[in-house]
Image (cartoon, rainbow, N blue to C red; front, side):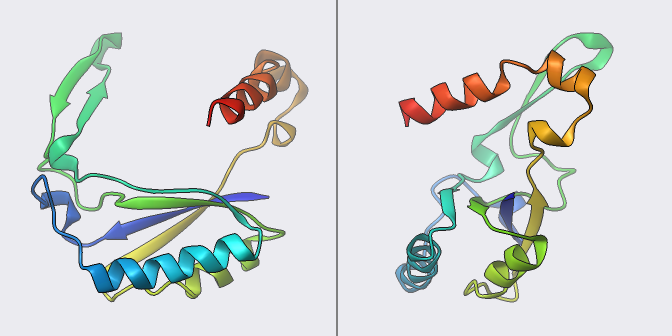
Length: 140
């Protein structure tokens, strides 16, 4: 089972471009990341620039509308993520619980939808998905 662990830092929704990182926090997080890697569960991880550097594309009436960040209505935003492969939701929760997060951070855990989770008609509609995922993995 693949799970995405989403880091949601309080206040990141209003962070300015070029936010400064604390080297001690980064070092602690790297130790955690290395433990995920040593355990063989880590598939991917990245931090994200703040929303002030991003954009949102919505589709009112079916037409794209672009709004540049920051997004005043945002209450919580993702600051980074880990993609892990574990045997259960409980194991994903256990890994998230080991993170050296602060009281200003929350980790949301979401299971990734696998093609096998869908009925036959949906699998047929998405039949190229495994091939596409393999191609993406080769480019990394």
